[in-house]
Image (tube, rainbow, N blue to C red):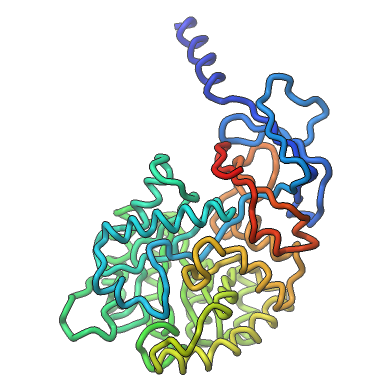
Length: 418
């Protein structure tokens, strides 16, 4: 037995090769400072030391020269299985789940190589009971695909005929949607929908508290899920130790979702002063997805969707400025593909245009995102955390746009781009 343990220890040491990454400096996102130089020691998947007094003699050295290292960025609102070209009709009506998974793998690779090492896939957008984003997450974990760490939501939970009902606008009774697809009527079906997503691998639950922009309802902000349905979703999800994200544009739906106990409000377009106070008091994150406004050409949209977008997007921008000024906790989300996959870092400069400084913007994609996920193992460059690291040419505290041209990507100690 003693010999076996010795051999096992030797084997583990061989597998966990020590790596030393050297660079001009790294960003301490907590303090919002550039620390120089950067000497980061990695064993296996984990950072074991940052700027130690004695550098390891036997380490494999990766010299990044004048580059600046950051923790891997995180996107809290992505749809990897979706692409956007003014609409989604071809994907919704003509694409199988298997093709959707291949599309998702393509977009996951773009996202990782852009420096985003963790993504919350906040609801798949295919008319199927198959769990595409769960399959992507499992394939990523197994190393089958080049992809970020994926937190899957499965199907979005929505009322029949609501924003998440992907058959909205199609011929009546063409496809029957059920709680397995996330489409519910009443609290009992809401619980059934949550249980089905979790049973099949979802790690976060997404619900549609209100109507939306890119769906065929007349209103953009009307509350859709009832208070009782929202409470049932949140209570059931919490019973499983998981968190709930609420798509919510409308004022009353935002506040109803907060009262129900969600962890994040997605979009929050018509957030008012009372809602801001509620979010701060309850430490509910806003995921504003503001940068996608610059990519949506309303002239290409269906007239009903264009009318809603032209009404709500300017209000969303004004309310985001108020939320930032008031100190609402904010985590980065792109709503990709509305910001195209691989251009996720555009959201950082978009939030700066609404009142953030560069340090706060970087925190939304690192320590804030980690806090929203409840993941203490990532989001900073510290000993004991995952070796999810990226590098850029300039100091992002002085030029945030440098994050849109990532030169080096490491996830879990493995290099994907250099």
